[in-house]
Image 1 (tube, rainbow, N blue to C red):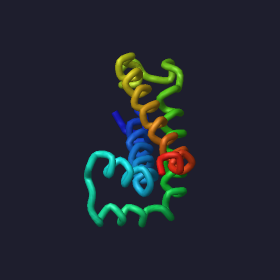
Image 2 (image 1 turned 90 degrees about the vertical axis):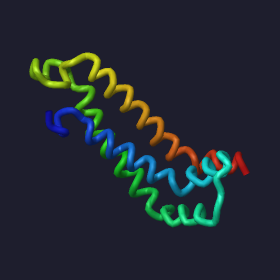
Image 3 (image 1 turned 30 degrees about the vertical axis):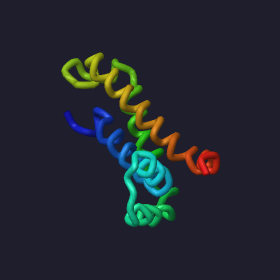
Length: 116
């Protein structure tokens, strides 16, 4: 099964881009909350100028994933992975998990002042 037909590649790309988009702001706060500290945490702020690009890449990847995951079942051949109900459900759960991560990356700079 090719990556382009399943939507898996787009989900992975969206997830990676969402993690990179939130690494500059959310990453240090989570690490400090978990008790992990060090001067190296300040290096994560270097990613801040690239945050809009990461968010854009995540949103584009999610559009492609949505097109593949939420297409009608009739568009799938009987032997394809997208025709299996359990696989479609797992992809939908992964899609909405990544969407929640992207939403967190988008909203975090606005919610951040409430923590300080």
